[in-house]
Amino acid sequence: MEGALGRTVMVVPTYNEAENLAWIVERLRRAEPEVDVMIVDDGSPDGTGEIADGLAAADPQVQVVHRSEKAGLGAAYLHGFRVALAQGYDVIGEMDADGSHQPEQLYRLRSALLDADLVIGSRYVPGGSVVNWPLFRRLLSALGNLYVRLLLGMKVRDSTAGYRLFRRTTLEKIDIGSVNVTGYVFQTDMAWRTVQAGLTVREVPIEFVERVRGDSKMSSDVAIESLQRITWWGLRQRTSRVLGALRPVRR
Ligand SMILES: Nc1nc2c(ncn2[C@@H]2O[C@H](COP(=O)(O)OP(=O)(O)O[C@H]3O[C@H](CO)[C@@H](O)[C@H](O)[C@@H]3O)[C@@H](O)[C@H]2O)c(=O)[nH]1
Image (cartoon, rainbow, N blue to C red):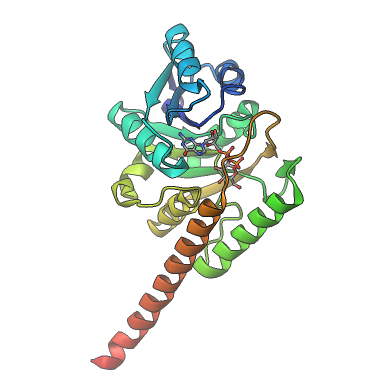
């Protein structure tokens, strides 16, 4: 459906979210009736895909993309983005299915997108917060974001956050075809690409609430992929800066 920003769809990746999905989709549809929903399910064994089919059958603004197996958060989003671009959406968003991202706060992201290319719902700008996260996750997230800022020099405070809105033009400019990460580091990769393309990233405060049902899919593999990729991108950036500075000397 069409709003001031054009047709908007929220891509919602799911893996074993049977306890959460209907609740979150209903909240999103109620909070933002103009916004469409695309569920991208990776063959969840707990029946999430069937629940998604039921939601899509009952509401023409809800659709489902079924993938055969769990292949990572980033891979699921990329698949959803490609489908959304092909369907002509003007604004393409990201949102977790577990209630951590509150649909009732989406209006903040939508109004910020009026003068931005990417809006991030941020836990780490004034007014943002995290509710009920264990100390370990708080530390991991804070250190991860600090590492990104130190290594990449990126000013974004919450580059790992997964509540976002992209303009269609942003996804076209940052060449999502060349994204080759599969896990949660996808979030940092997308923010980094947007900054490097000279586009405007705005962060708006959100309250991130830890899920009450089901489990996080965060794993050591996801954390290791993030650490390796961010380190590699940082080193690559430094090396190319040094080579760039040496070039006039060589002539
Ligand atoms: N299709 C699909 N969905 C997935 C996969 N892995 C996770 N998801 C879905 O992606 C959403 C986020 O996964 P969670 O496992 O609940 O994330 P989290 O630990 O709460 O992490 C949150 O915070 C991170 C930042 O600290 C964010 O990077 C992440 O996006 C998310 O918002 C959920 O809807 C979950 O079902 C996957 O391999 N495939």
